[in-house]
Length: 559
Image (cartoon, rainbow, N blue to C red; front, side):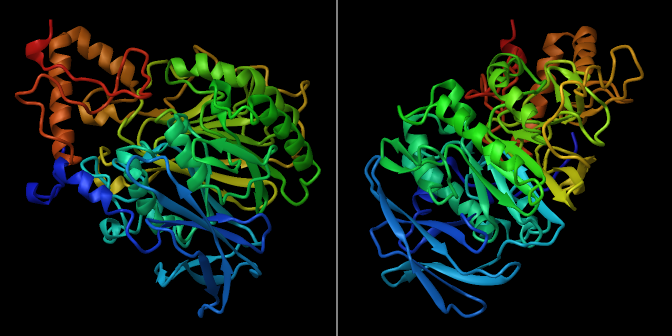
């Protein structure tokens, strides 16, 4: 395996110190500062946290802080052995495309002064989109993040600010995180959520950080954290309030907003899987969604592109998630997206990346010029403790490109007709390491006639018919790491060939070698030697990595 410079053992964070590190994430002054777009273009919302009850205000101005506005404070009482406070405030009277400075706080304690640029009105617009990023293993945040520690804050990333999400500050207009935060927000008595929010402050305090709800926010404690931490999002949900174990506040399970030439809709795909407070239900969301899309179609001169995003897939191709859970969501959602001419649906959940051709009811067209159906994309590989998600199924005809390397998606909207789509790799297991920040998928979407799609014109064929001249359209992180394949061979074929030739014991030995390399070079726990099993990455039979990590067996224990 290729080598990589790593910190000396004395520089790695021992596991016994992690709790102490997490406990310091919520200090007395305001912390965890993060922006969101306001409900009108001349406003910006900001949220933060404090360990103690305190007055709330935001101060802002162009250079000097000449304006202020009171904030709203709420206690969070669901973590064991502590009560802490979330705060929100609205910055008003903004001029378009103007640099502002601000700080938040009260009672004599204020945050550092941060800067942001108010919403711009002239294209191009750059939008960064991803899902599934933890506190530890947040490889897309910056190249300094590791699996050994949940701490990857501004100090950790200070020498690595040219690539990754930290490199998007000053370039991206908005960042959209499509569910699954921290892994998980309520863990370690809520302090893991504190550390995650501290980590992203270096980005989210400068660029509006928009969110949607994921399955890792389903449990009562994690749902309460999600709703309270992001109650400043520009919600227009019906009903407007949502009740968690921490009480009732803004309903941010679904809402929409416009930025530049795009109408964004954030939905909770978890409502298909039982998340409700009794008032906000799957049916209230679907009813709201149809009305929102109908209104958006009346506004396509101002916002011609429509992008709906949530957490779980409508279409994907990696494992059993793509038939069972995705099929459940697809039954309700695909007809609505088609009816109202939604250009793109994006989600996380699968820890990989995939972009479809225009797709309807499993049929696809190869061209992305004047699509006749919605384009679907998975972008759930920002980096988490569950690591990569393997592809256990053959790439389908409709899949334009897929990769299970870590990364995020960047969409550059040039005008009403042209959108430039790029997938950016942030995978420390890729070689050479200079590839961190490289573009691995690059496509243009051209739509000259936005609006509802037509059944008569909908795709009815196969983008790449089986048996035809089908190029390899995927990247798999296993191939260079395991030294398998080459000449375009698919990883599943490479693994099958290796096991046929050398046997299962040799395959497990190769995996253990990979485990040994990963823990040294990615900053994991002690190596596998002398232990019956260690955790690194889930590769169960169905390929799913939801909520579990694979236990690697050493060759000595293989029966």
